[in-house]
Image (cartoon, rainbow, N blue to C red; front, side, top):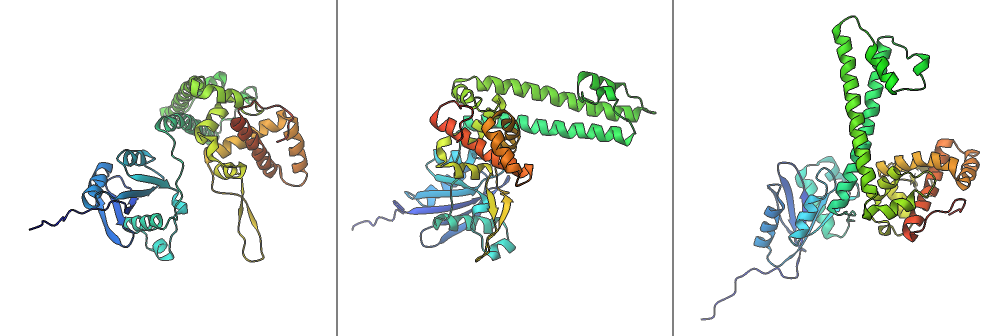
Length: 357
């Protein structure tokens, strides 16, 4: 009697997995081409998911998606290593029904992701290498520390104002210098509590300064390494771009060739106008809220310097300032500066002053 082959085989079939990630568990929705297999919870481990897929859908082509956010890209890397074609998508780009928007939970999100993946409606984000992400973290940490330092300085200023202390004229132009810190430390209060409060704030400020100085040295060392040195030298040839600015650009963009044109790069940075049009009415809503916040703020700051140093940008800024506020004009200059950056990185040529691009 001939024995029947009862082995399950999904060879050549696509299996779609929507993954809603969490700290303690993942919500998983699995779809085939025709139906929904199951929506369930599992431990937050890529190995557990791959084991389930291989056990229930042997030979299948596994397609997985999860939203970018708290967990970064390590899940993507782990699944890829085990043969799962995983993408990471922007949460704002996932098609959402009104019912899903009003009744949102992890199960709904997982199903929505799996459905959109099967329908081919999702765009994958660019996933840098692990080393590129670690370099980016180093530079972002410095930026975050500078923001904390600014917040700490504002706390100290508010503390002085609360108790009626006025900064002497001799120190008015040398805020946060060694002499200014010494003056702060010499202030007296009626009791120990006030002095202790100010001392704690000053200790925090000193710690942040040391951390920023250390990170700045580390970034400088990184900029001199083989993978960055040539690119940094090209970028600093552009007026307004310092070594630190160049490292922010390189760590955030990673690969300039992934942007097909200037519009795509400007969209990633956030230097394009938003639009709210309907029918015959066309209305722009100003600069887009969607952006890479690290790049856009840095480029705006660099543009103020570049507009003073580069004659071509200075002429453009003066013309723009005649028909719009300077804060809007500098955004146009930032886009021109971004064009220079793209040209230099793409063609591997240093920038030549007064050349309009």
